Length: 213
Image 1 (spheres, rainbow, N blue to C red):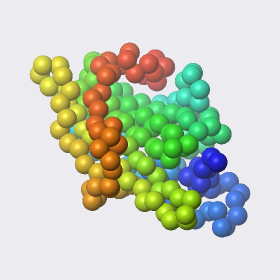
Image 2 (cartoon, rainbow, N blue to C red):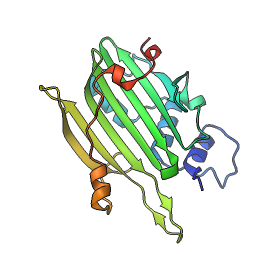
Image 3 (spheres, rainbow, N blue to C red):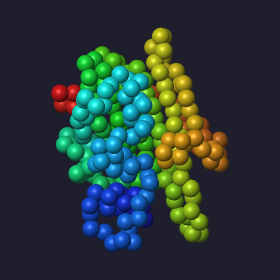
Image 4 (cartoon, helix red, strand yellow):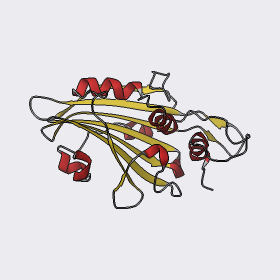
């Protein structure tokens, strides 16, 4: 059975008519992200990464797109509608451009496995300089009625002088990005969290060129 509770909470926050029993806020990361867009209050993580990237969020407006299947669709405002909400998997992206600097915030949603991933990319002259990824597993109610707590894993990489990605930070975090006690994972699951970015350029991201105009 597909689990739609996180999306129902998001839609409730956007003004949908849902009973009061369903509108209790769920602080999943993507829901917080959409609430921030609606209230014009960017995430603390975005503000920090933008400063690191050399992007002034107060003077540059983002352009949005989403990916409900295999084709990117430009979106004026994600808070007012996202294509693909009826599916288990969809992607959204926000792009800021200031002179030769580009900042990308990408969200990948895999709701059939209760997974949300946010990735920041910082580019200079269309070359990726810095990447930060936070992957969250949402709380899950098990068959025996017990609740499996949610958790996240955050990683940060810089491209070094040799042109290789160098991991500079990694830690388990909560839905606000704050460090937590690591969850109990088997060795295979733990190793699967550690990876190195493969993309190197703006072209590698395969995003619409219109997002830079």
